[in-house]
Image (cartoon, rainbow, N blue to C red; front, side):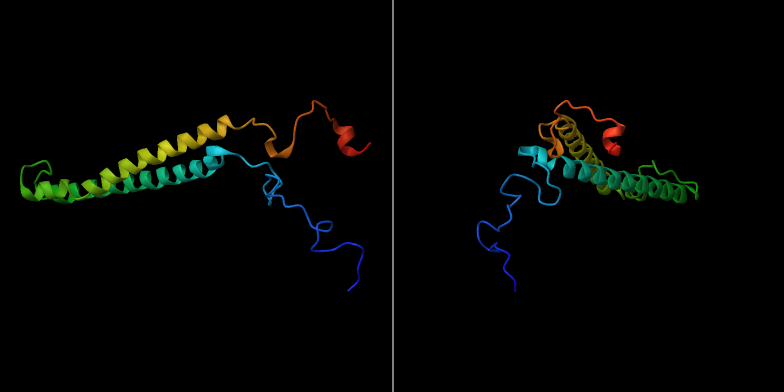
Amino acid sequence: MEDNGRETGGPEGARPDPCAAGEDAAEGRARRHGVARYARPALVTGVVIAVVCLALLVIIFFLDSFNATVYSVGGKDVHDATDEARSIRETYAAARLGGVVFLIVGLALAAAGAFLVYRDRNGADRNGARDDGEDVDFEDLGGQ
């Protein structure tokens, strides 16, 4: 092996640790502190929960409608006071209640995440770049 004057393991040849400097190693961005670091994951998680619960509630609505239609073919009414009609009405009650509760939780989580993303949108050192007020035009970008 050839020695080019630098040690690979020593302090002179060691690479600076981006995590120690408070930067994200993958993208070189400044890290968010506090609850702002959880804003985007909370937003995505809340939206996914809300969409899944909404789909579940739509499916339950169609299943309830189908059961009521099949039950009423014989001239019966699903709103009767019979045990069979009550059983059909209560078939998906727990899933419907759970779907509504998780839908509300998902929407609240998404709203909180969206608020935190909105609040942190113009934070200092956003994406590791500061605005020093210098305008750049096309000639500067094209190298002319």
